[in-house]
Image 1 (cartoon, rainbow, N blue to C red):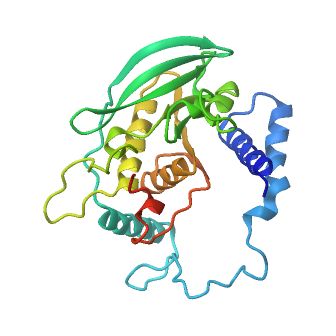
Image 2 (cartoon, helix red, strand yellow):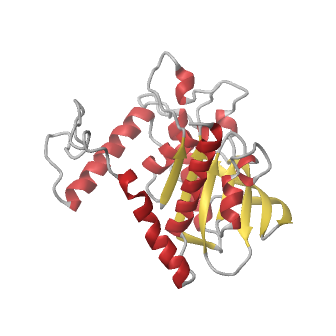
Image 3 (cartoon, rainbow, N blue to C red):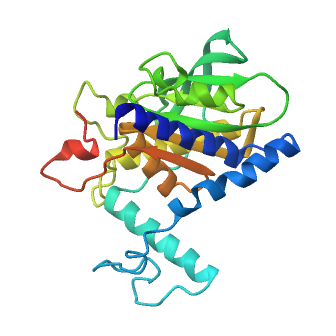
Length: 278
């Protein structure tokens, strides 16, 4: 796939995300949104030759004791079992922050929205990360997106080209919170633990720590007056794709997510593939 085709495909995903979580404003918009899934319906099913071929992989619809998932209650048990397993492998989180502190540093107008540079509390001992908050004009409740990447500037249109996902969504009616790499996972120094785990606990791994940061950002967005708390998603590309993937899988309050090119590989001999930075 060419670079142009890749970014065009990813922009289509953004538009679909916009349609999926935005309320329709007219019959015309409603018709367009309702018809969109039919255009891409084949992409939601595996090819016929692979539809029932699971290889040697164990079905996710079986609990570890061998019981098959048959009801909604069974599936909730299985979800909890999977989550417990992954937290055991990657390290358990410290308590989530109930009311993350937000410091507003700078404010300016851009097109049809307001841009604010912010500093957000994201971890114990008042650890913070800098970012940008984009708020569309208007008085209604807006869906919101958390954009994660190496830096906070790119997603809001102040960095690399063709990755300004937050900027594009805000112009279409989303609140965007864009953050970059927190200091504890700095690209300029060896990875430092987010917090000190107990001696008998697995140290909190980098991608799980970043998911914890995203969970606290979700809480911060919930507390904003212009944000619909039930329509908050997360989006990321490459390194941000890994971050968004783990955040949405380990914290199910995110209403939707878009991962682009996350490239997860479990190979301890190559720690950089899972972002043990640097």
